[in-house]
Length: 132
Image (cartoon, one colour):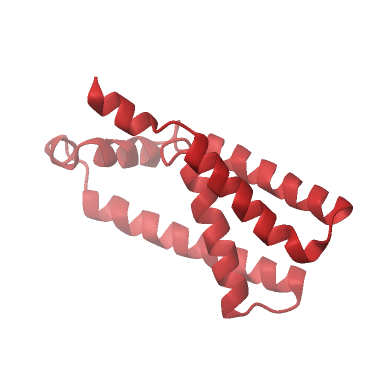
């Protein structure tokens, strides 16, 4: 949707160069407001679905979900939503397999350790492009 819609094209233009996008007639304030409302609605729907699935949501549960999302986004890349979604699928699969074969009490620790190891061992693509 971000790759093919008018909103996605405007959003990418503003992310790349806000001044040039404004000179081309793109209203950055409108794009910002729509993105904030869409992300708030998505977060609210996600919270409702998580509460239905798990029975209740506390601060600690939300913090664990938030940390996992942060790590997944960092591994998948901030500019590649499909890669971040693929990373989220793999993390979910790893959690399910861990719960099936190992003690569930250690699942979050193992997932965080794996994500941290992946971040440490993956070369930084941004720094490599800045050096050249």
